[in-house]
Image 1: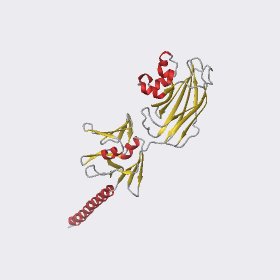
Image 2: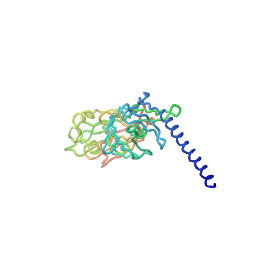
Image 3: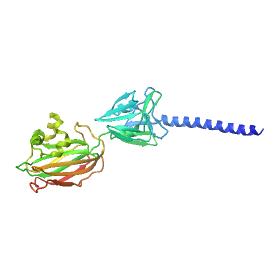
Image 4: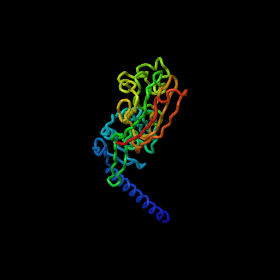
Length: 313
């Protein structure tokens, strides 16, 4: 009799727990079924074939890979051997391995607190970490249960101005370029014609930093022509960077640094640089770091009164 008194209460508890699990599971799936995704204000249309977004155990939104990323304007490929999805847009390649708590943006490993998965033979990816790798903004609207994605290119321009005084002997060369926060070359804004046309080959002192950073020796002629021009006359000069890379593709929002290199006289160089945040607040006066290399105090009036600003359109 004692055993029966113990057995039946335990059976009742187990049964209640099983029912609670089923109810919770159904409730969670019901909530997840209502998750929507809007990209630049347009809803992504999911179907029975594509699969539906859901919220995983880490409380992160998982979305069907192909339907979502193709509406985002990206190309999608799948490697069944490595179980890796590859997404490409604007010169950026993101690789998403199934079951791993990280993704790759080009060669950079980015950690994540959830994993891509395969459910009902469909590939799902964690939407925030993947889209943010492309520079998109991802927000969550709790009331409407919608993921809001903004992929519109960041609007803002970097402006660099300075007074230029042409120098007659072994100088008057300058270049302006952009690097990302890790020191990777992004694009050349301008470079004077003598150096880019091959002058650096017999005058090694001509803009050595820019020549090395830009990979000038490997550039195609159309690309060289697009970034350079004849040495201008005396006066106030202004150059603008529009937030694109060397191929004209918008770059992701984030921290960047510009460089202005000037060859003053043979090996005497001037290097000015400054940091700013693309997509961030306006900076009307970016702090400048100016230094002279092999300083012999000659032709320092070639580039003077440098100013730089980041202005939001």
